[in-house]
Image (tube, rainbow, N blue to C red; front, side, top):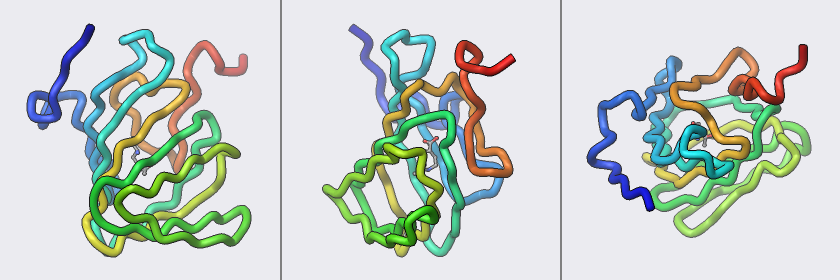
Length: 134
Ligand SMILES: CC(=O)NCC[C@H](N)C(=O)O
């Protein structure tokens, strides 16, 4: 059994601040835990706009604090996500986050992220090496 606390990973290597300054991710479970997913606490800042496209991952996002508009750029659908609401990017959906307040969520990635991933120009994380095309 592994026990970790958000407090103990704050400001360590597991605490990743996106280069665009719109979010922060505290990564509680990573690839090297060998359980097939990663688990993060993500904070997205009010008034920011973040374009994402997890083409190499699935992500589930459970809101625990705040409000965030999530627009699906593939379908045009727009949803307001509040505490207790979850969205699952089951189709690697291109999407845009517009938090109305500080937004805090618990996020699960499959395949797991490895540590310090930040978004590329498409809003993606790199494909895990085992899945990378030659
Ligand atoms: C909601 C979302 O995807 N925010 C970007 C950060 C990501 N959740 C992460 O924790 O790496």
